[in-house]
Length: 147
Image (cartoon, rainbow, N blue to C red; front, side, top):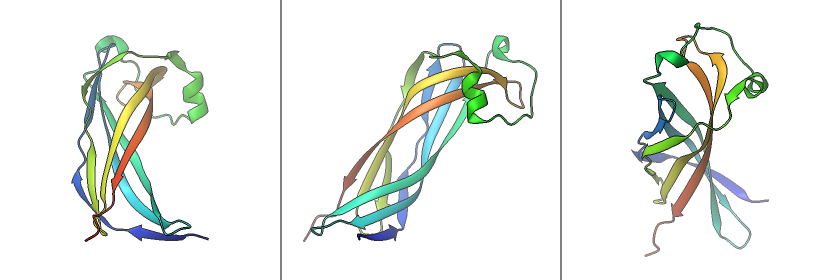
């Protein structure tokens, strides 16, 4: 069984990525790293695992997309079944790397990228449409140089 070590880390950069949706709204999204796990594999090599979450916000929603505000909580299945625009086109305005430094000196970079945006017919408590956003996370790990 491999040994797992949870490591502390410093946030060097966690920028917002920004996308202009063809329908009008602006999507701002960022990945927030919450945990770094270092695993010693057979043969003495190390691998890293990351835990985190996406934070997203929509702004500049045009009036034609707004509707009656709702305080309803929708399940993922309900939202999936309520998609009215399966693939909302978007333009990337800004998409940057997050940067972290782990306590053992390992440099960690991750890039969150939007893969797909879908609009549902459901509204949030401001009357804005609820979007489903699929993302992908690209990691880069650079262990400290041995002296």
